Structure formats: C-alpha cells, structure tokens
Length: 114
Length: 111
Image (cartoon, rainbow over all chains, first blue to last red; front, side):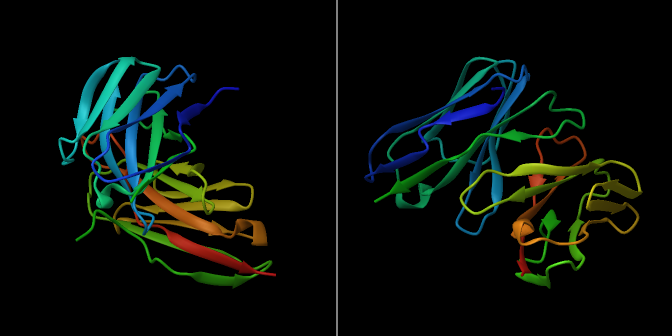
C-alpha cells in the first residue's frame, strides 16, 4: 500500500532516556516533515527535509535531532527525554514544499514520558 | 495573534443538519488552504483544499474562501454521526514551506 508509515505507534519511556522514531514514505514525495501534536490537538511543525536537505528547523530544543538518510526516510532522535516531550509525533510528506501540495500524514507515534 | 484561529467547540449539530466550521488566518499573502479531519486517536486526513476565492464543493463538503476577509470555512451538509471528529484548518503562508494549523474545532453530530 502507498502510505506514510512510522514506528513505533506507542512509546513509553522514563525521563532521561534517549529514543528514536522512524518514518518511511513510498509516495515518491520529495519532502518529509515532523509535526508535534500536544494534548490540546495543536499541530506544530518541528522539522522538514527536502530530498535529504534540512529546510525547516523550528524553535525546538537541540535534544531533538532529525536525520534523513534518503528522501523516503526521516527519523527523529530525542535525547534526555523530559515530561514535556509527551505528545503525539506525526510524520508527513508532500510532493513539494513550495507549491500547493497537501500533507499526507503517518499514523502517529504517541510518546509518553514518565 | 495566532496565525490560524479556530473556535475549539464543541460544535453540536443534529443529524441531517448543516455544520459550519470557520477559520481565520493572519497572513494576508497566504495562497493555499486545507481542511483536515482527525478522528480521536487517528492521524489527520485531507478533506478539502481551496486556493481561489469562492466556493468549492466535493460531495457533502463545501469549502469557502474569502481572502479579503482572511476567512475560510467548511460546510458539511446532511451531517452524519460519522462526521463527529476534530476539523483542522491549515494554511500555507507567504514563503512558508510547511502548513500552519489551527487548533481545530470539535464537531459532534447528534443522532
């Protein structure tokens, strides 16, 4: 199936740990994104890569580090997890970041930090 | 002022009625506007996109855009209980490379 898939779906971990979330898309899109959705449903852009180049790096703690090994994959590594990092993290992709292309979302990773 | 504003709701309508969801945005140069639907515990899914002033219809959904008033809306005709979800307005601002989302309006359709 063509889709944006991310793993894991759920991630429960303790404060101070380091964790990674992986994302893959087989839609042939050039651009991938990480969005964070807080408990109030607000979706906020964190990072974006276009064909392996970082093009968006919003005000995010440097404990968060994205990596894109190729244009079909985008991973998110989080160091020294904090309680406030608990949220749902969505990966998304689009054909082109500069035109009217809509976003296609993955199913999300619900991160709970205890 | 938030870049994209929506009333959080809940907006409660009876089954079969028209649901009207509204969104305002601050960047006057914005060119692309999207409505996403998000069921509880699920990812946002695209319902409509609109780029020009006026109305755009797709089945039971109509998106309306008024760039002069910086206002975009979504009408859902013949609302069904299955339409109960959070509706997210998303805007592509001037020179922006990502969509900016509103905080969403929760719609409840009462059987």
